[in-house]
Image (cartoon, rainbow, N blue to C red; front, side):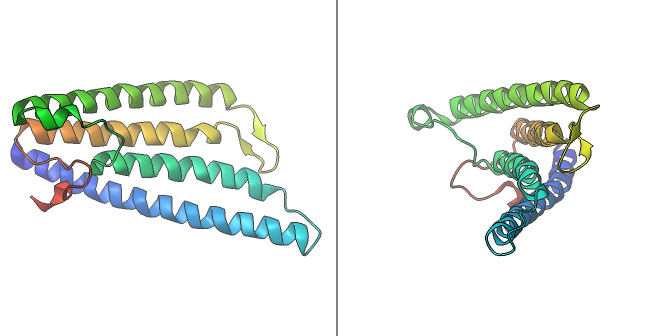
Amino acid sequence: MQSFVRNLSAVLRIVSLVSLWLAGTGLVLMTAFIAWQVWGRFVLNDTPTWTETSSVLLMGFFILLGAAVGIREGNHLSFDVLLYLLGPKAKSVLHSVSDLVVIAFACGMIYYGTVLAANAWDTTIPNLGISGAVSFFALVTGGVLMTLFSVERLLRRVVGLHTARFGEQGMDGD
C-alpha cells in the first residue's frame, strides 16, 4: 500500500507543479491585461472591454489553483495552538479531521460549482462571447484538486508517510 501511495504522490506532485505554474501564468496574464487596459484608457483613449472580464476569470483560476497547491503542501490556514499540547497520535487524528473538513468543503465547491455552471451554460459573457459556465470552472477545478490533495494527505498518514504542515519540509522528500 505504501508504494501505491508513493506513486500516487509522485503523480500528484506533477499535478501540483502544473497547477502552480498555471496559477503563476494566470497572475502574469492578469497583470498584463490590466496594464493593457490602463494603457488603452489613458494613452490610446480606447479602453479594451475584454481585459477586466478576462482578468476576473483568470483571478478565480489562479487563486483556487494556488489554494489547492497550498493544501497539498500543508500551507493552508490552521489553528495549531491545541496541537502544541497534544501527543503525536492526537495530532495525527486532528490533522486527519482537518483534511476531512477540507474534503467536505471541496466537495461542496464541486457540487455547487457544477450546479452554477449548468445554470449558466446557456448565458454568454458579453465582452468575451463565451459561455457563462466558464465563470464557475475554476470553482469546480479547485474543488477537485483540493479533494485529491486532501485524500493524498489522508492516505499518506494512514500508511505512515510524512505529511507536511506549515513551515515544514514538503511531502515529496520521502
